[in-house]
Image (cartoon, rainbow, N blue to C red; front, side):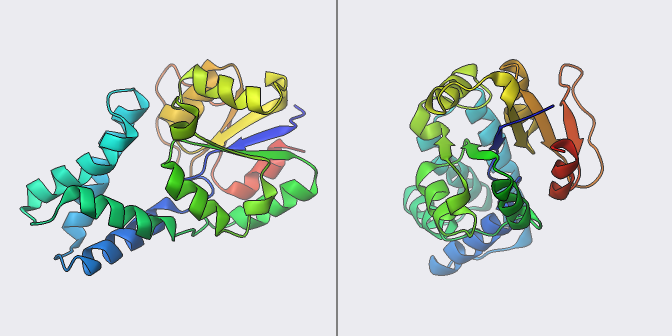
Length: 229
């Protein structure tokens, strides 16, 4: 298959979101002089994951999500802090964290040199995603950064992909490949839009829902080269 457009998810695919999130949480708790622990971190990750899934299905807005996760966390651990103020602080810390997943920089540089058209498609928060990409060494390699918050639609909704493809000049769907780690947003979104998908699944392959069939599965980013030969 000959692809021209490679549409990459950001967090968990190119950017090491786990590392960025951990660093931002620790820094925000330190600045606010709040007690921090591994239990707080793991609980936050669980709360955050559930809220992002709710966001993907349209049950909560991104504005509410960014505060609600800290409301729930502070309530559970009885922490005296204002969720709105803390959310702004946390996002500021997160925006400064642009760690890349191992192999991401090399992959993107090589693909760009091979004349592929590259774009990022993300459900992340706009102010954070734009800052993180701008601070990364791969920023100049992408011809588009498409963020759900700015497009007014969320992966996996087809209207998100409608907006992306429109701004790319409406390339043929067969010329594009969606690459991402999220089954619920990237793979389902691409599949529903009838675009080939590449599921980035580091480690052991997870069990797939019966209605999801990625076109390809890779366990290392470098394995993408084998698909694009």
